[in-house]
Each structure stands twice: as structure tokens, then as C-alpha cells.
Image 1 (cartoon, rainbow, N blue to C red):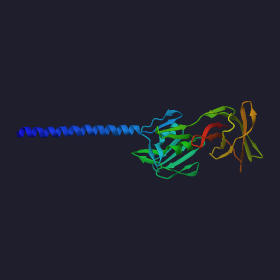
Image 2 (cartoon, rainbow, N blue to C red):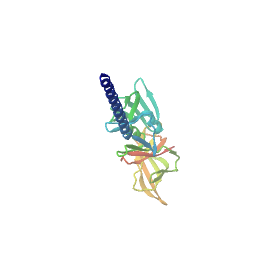
Image 3 (cartoon, helix red, strand yellow):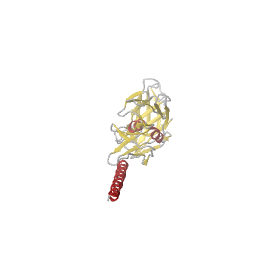
Image 4 (cartoon, rainbow, N blue to C red):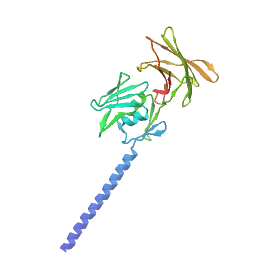
Length: 259
């Protein structure tokens, strides 16, 4: 009887271990399934950006690995491991971010952040909306799909070439300086009269001046526009950016013309 009792004791222990193992595996599988369901996907111009580590939400902001997002946007980056700072630059914008700081600098101007950049398990994460919008992109969030959609136009046009952005067709045709360099006027064409176009001119040092395009006439089916920009000092433009308002009601870059 004692042997039978010992046998049943071992059998009960064995069965208990099996139950715990099955329960643990089911719990682990459910947890992984939940994590997979909660994954955040990021799309740039309709194509998903592949990250080697997953984005996450912090203070209501989507955080992504800095190198992957900047490279996807075609922005040059440098990392200073000693000072723990990121410098990101393109033709018109320079973004300076320091890990753990609640602010960053865009073209030398201090900008507050809703979520500071941070290092998690050896990887540096930055707020996606902040870096994307300051690079000139339009960003929208679909909460139901847990997806971020970025629209970004990075093609460079020659003066007179037609650019396209959604329903927009437009061009920057020429510019001229008036009144001994005190006024710059940019001329072009646009198909949609009701859409606001912002014209920004940059010099080699990323200083810029800007104006709003105003319709002045017609050229066939296209509207002619002028953007007058008043200057306080001499200005030698090298690049023209055209912006309009995107889905988030913030300016989004829709074309670039090099002079």
C-alpha cells in the first residue's frame, strides 16, 4: 500500500507540473499574441518601414528608432555618443536632439517636446511626429489600426517643372528681386485656387524667408500666382520649398526647387 501511495503522490506531482507547463505556455502565447496585436506600424508614402526593434507609445507620442526614421526620410544623421546628441540635416533643416531633454533645436530655434528622446536597451528612440514634421512630412495616426502614415515628397525639381501632391498640380517658374533687393517675388502656376501654397526661400546657411502665393490670373486651366516676400537685408536664395497644409493641419513640404 505504501508503494501505491508513493506512486500516486509522484503521479499527482507530475500531473501538476504538466498543468502548470500548459498554463504557462498558453499564458505566454496569449501575451505574445497581445503584443503582436498591439504592434505599431509605420508607413511612408504607403510603404511600411521595417524596424529592427518595435516602436512604442510614450506620453501619447509614437517613439521610433532614430536611425531608421531619419534614413527613411533621406536625412543625414550623426550621433555623438559622448554628449548623447543627434544631429539630423537635409538641404533646408537642421535638427539637434539631446537624449533626455524636453526640448530640441530646429535651425537654431528651441522647440519643446511632448516626449524626450531616450535610450532603451541600448537603442535610441525619438518622437516620430516631431522629427517627421520638422523634416517637412505630413503625419497622421489611425488609432483603430495602430498605424502611423507619413506623406513625404523629396523630389527636387527644376524651375518650370510641374510638381504633384494629391489633387495639387503646381510649378515654381521664376523669381526676381525688386527695389534693390528689398522684395523677392516668386512666380508660378497652380491648378487649385482654394489651396494655400507657402513659398519658402533658403540660402546656404538655412536662413529662410517666406510668403503666401496669391492668385493673379489664368493661364489656360492653370492659375497664375505670385508670392511677394519682403526682406530686411540682402538675401541670396539657393533653394525654394513649396508647402501646403496636410491632414494634421500643419505645413507639409510638397516640392523643392533648387536654383
